[in-house]
Length: 380
Length: 122
Picture 1 (spheres, rainbow over the protein chains, first blue to last red):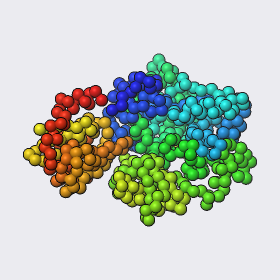
Picture 2: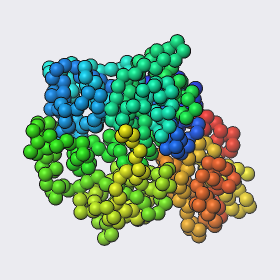
Picture 3: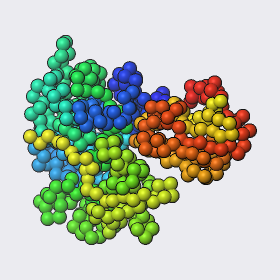
Picture 4: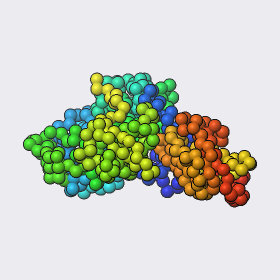
């Protein structure tokens, strides 16, 4: 078994994870908790029924400052940044010159800056890319001193508002600054109502010096238990959310990935600020002519109770290879195999039957709409 | 007599046949088991052949033949409730029974002390 390695970085909650009995694994260069003694299934179900605390401090946080920050950041993404209202959060995609995805991210317009959260494994490259491309137009300020905690689940709001009155007024994909007062502590946080589980919940950016105190406060709430990266993965897959490196990467475009919704009208052909991002020609051509798209990301459900994992080949009824699974597992909520896959466009219609070739044997699956489990975001 | 393999199977010898399962250490490392694939009864497999698969939500692992022989019974209760591999790995969570074709192979397997040392050093 792999144990936490000396070469791995630690988040500010490392000691807390060990004291909670977590099994640590290497992830994005960090020693991270993959599960606690309750186990992945229990942590998954607890998140869907109550509230779970995830340490996601390996993720990169940075801010862009300056009057031109939004206009500059738009040149890197097919996303409307300039019209994002103060306090609102949006999903974004950094693209390369071929329209491939360098990373996916969340950004918030905080009024005095753009606050950005990127994937842990991509953060060094992202910061270098952003600095190189737009560093002359705005300040690019990495925030390695910030930890990130995710509190997710239908009871997350009950637990957090007890500590942080007013947070319940946030709606999905919005955020604000909050102070949590507790005994002698005064913890400054930036909180968004968002997450990676499909549930209502929050992501809390906090200074590393206050991260453990905040985590302990949250874990002291009766609704809250810790959950690891294992449950985070099964939860996000049920919610139909992409994992960078599995489901999207530099070899996939936003259109192949079915992330068209992330490209606002103003950046599309005919929009006021159409194009003007890396790979715009390729991405907009795919968006404008969906018939030319060779492959698409789809959801699949298994018709037999056999898990279907990443890299499994997909065949049509005649035995022809038509695609490959990029993420897959037995859904703890549905007790049924679910997967995401890239398949030839003619096989992408909902209801299409395909065979996943597991250990040489065909396992029938059906293309289905995502999310696999209904999302429960709080939209007010 | 119970013997162990470096691949974390246990073998309990009963006359000229043996029961095979995965160890406490193996099920703990895998986490919640959600699926098992068991060999066909009547099939003859050689030592170290893949006999089955055990999967948790996060990982899949092959189950190897600890010894050569014919599969004479598989645990249908485990197929129906794979969590038995977690709750009772050495008992109700057994995988299959094999008719030994070369009992001498047992001598080279690990005893409990050697297996415990292996898992502690892993």
